[in-house]
Image 1 (tube, rainbow, N blue to C red):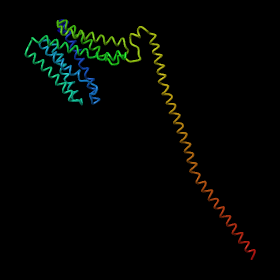
Image 2: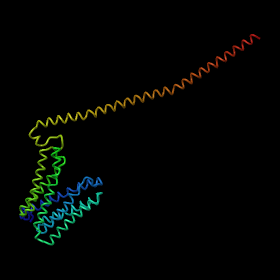
Image 3: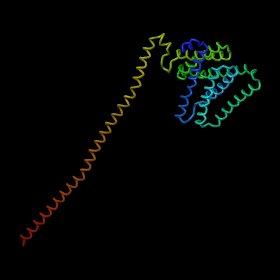
Length: 311
């Protein structure tokens, strides 16, 4: 029975299942952003635009899928709208700029309401304008990472580009482009073909430029092996240069500690000597006083003897 089920599966059905799994997995990329917001207890420097565009695009594609009766698109976009909505609610409660995010949410609600109203008025006549609008949203979503290309070209490194996200975009867009070819839908083919091209450009940048500044790119490593040895020696020299100030600082700290210990010991000895000096002086003065008393007694006795002799 199971073998017959797999035997009867068509390419479109297999592609629908795989596209659903990969697209839903891509939507979970918002969880690390939410975790980062939760740790910081603030949404500073984190934009809500991906969540807003996610909700807007998912609802538009959902309505398009309902008009077309495409169950794969319906299932994917129900999940996407729900998940993006939860991300947006979390962002709203964590942000301090409630007024600004409220205005943006109201704008999204207005655009969704306008679309639903136009669909209700014009019914199937709005199918192609709605498809064109959905296609535009997808192109904007795929083109969002291109804003970081200027930074990549200026720094000549791919530190600002997320490689896993680029690979995921390539996988998802290629599956949906093939799905659009199978269902003969130009509004699915066009944005995902552009998404494939943009994702391939982004991945190619990882071959041309290094992951971090000061390192070699994969292309440089393949075509110029001598650079690897030069880079390795350069990095070792740099490490030695970085270690020298640390070693000097450590030695200076040790020497200063020894001097302080020596000074402390010397001060302790001087204190002991100074404490002993008054005792010695007191003893010497007491001895002198006793000598004076003895001399006075001897003088008085000698004077008495002289007086006796005279009498």
